[in-house]
Image 1 (cartoon, helix red, strand yellow):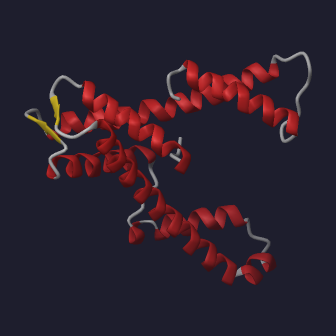
Image 2: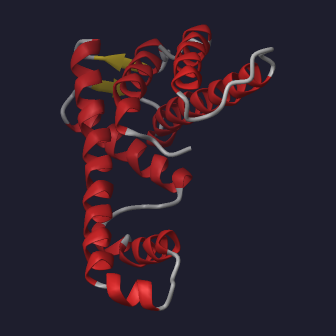
Length: 183
C-alpha cells in the first residue's frame, strides 16, 4: 500500500513509539520531538513524489492533442512517464525499496542529530523502523478490506459513491482503525 499524506502523523507516532519501547535503543529527546522529525522526513518524501506527479501531468498536458489523436490511455501514459522520470527525481516507486530508503533516512537523521543512541547494528534499528511502517500500512489495508466485507453483509444495500455509503464507510473504517490500534 502506498503511504499518503494523511498517514504521516500516524506512521511517525508508530515509529517513535516502537523506537522508544525498543530495548536496544536509548532515546535522548522527547517522543514528540522525534515524532515531528520523522513526520518531516515522511512528508519530504511524499512532497518529492507529488512534485514528480505534477511534472508528469504538465508533460502529458502539453501532449493532450496527441494523446486524444492516438486514443491513448492517459493513466498508462502517466505511469510509464512517471516510471521513466522517477530516478532523475529521486523517487523510488517500489514500496519495499522506498520504505527501506525512508528507514535509512530516518535512522541517519536521528543518529546524527543525537535523538537516539544504540550499540547494535544500524540494520537492526533500520528494520525496527521499516517494520513499523510496513505493519502500520498493512493494518490500514486490512481495515479497509474488513470494512468492505461488513458493508456487503448489510441487509440494506449500499451503493459505493453515495452519501449513505460514504458515511457508513467512514464510521466503520474509523472503528476498525481504533480496534487495530492505528488511531
